[in-house]
Length: 166
Image (cartoon, rainbow, N blue to C red; front, top):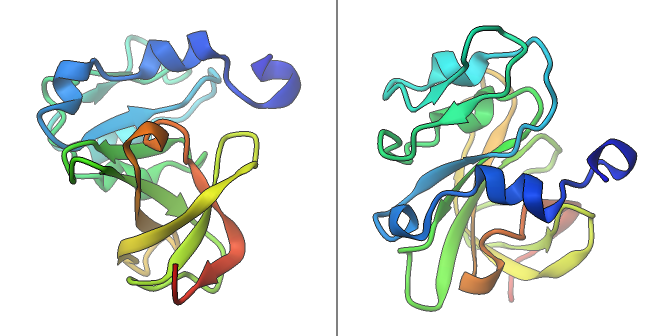
């Protein structure tokens, strides 16, 4: 399905999803990179050494969830926009999903963004609780507060799809 639609299968996602025990410890990276291409900026970006490749630059990145501290430095370094950080400890009702975003304008903290799943379907309106823009590589990182059951679903926002109230 991935090769035909660009949307990973349930099996693809299960292979890269942290275990529930790791989610319970705080923010953790989810690397949704499924194509063997010559790329490894995520490996260099991870000071904790949690993201590695086996032998070849074409290998898929692997995550040692025990070493990941959820810092998110890797998110903006991924040219494929395939890295996210999920924090299921944000609150009992909500998780925070940190997503890369490369369109302008970029929503501000406190605005609400129309969240999309991997197929581009609208999942609802979610508050931007933080925005990080370093200005170096033009990739902002948005922190969206989403319902717990959507933490592994929301992966983007609609360009220009944000507003000042919920």
